Structures are given as C-alpha cells and as structure tokens.
Image (cartoon, rainbow, N blue to C red; front, side, top):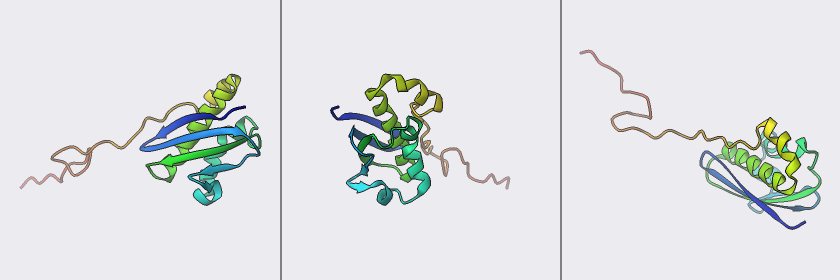
Length: 128
C-alpha cells in the first residue's frame, strides 16, 4: 500500500494526513500524539474512526496541523483520518458516515458587525 493523504477542516484548523501501513503510530507536527494532545479526551476524539473500524494497529499516521485551537484541531484530524480510511477501503464509508465522522462541521465564529460590541450583542439601551 502506498501513502494515502487526505485533508480535514474544523473552524479555522486544517489537518493534512498521510496514512501508510504500519504499527499504529500517530505523529502530529513531528511529535507523538500523547505529547501534542496531552488530554485523553482529545486523543480519544482523534482515534475514534480507527477504533470503529478496529484498525488502530494497522496504520501509521503522520499529520500536519495548522490554525485553530486544540479542540478544532483534534476534530479536523478526526475528519481527515476518516476520509483517508475511506480512500483505502470504500466499504468502510457506510459505518463512518453513520457515526458522523465524514461530515464536515461547518460552524465557525460569526464576524463582528459594525456598531456592535460583538457579532449579535448590542450596547445597553438607555432610555434617558
């Protein structure tokens, strides 16, 4: 198997993933996953598509993460891994789709509007 690449986005985070056959090592920005995401919850989010397909020990994953915060980055990485797994084996698509791992979460921060302190917040009304 050659190297399969995919991209995932969430908020302003972008994850580029390169998946190859291996022993289950996940490297993010040249760091191990436990070093990059110290939180066990974020590590779990990243590994969800692999655990669903029971492929955690089959593939080595190298990822480049850019932009956003740690939550957005972990979710962008999850989407990229799921897309790469579908490229490897098309039959996995149904299971990943049903769990929502192939759906791009398009929610992002709404822009600030002029004449307001935030996107929707208004300044306090004063009658007098």
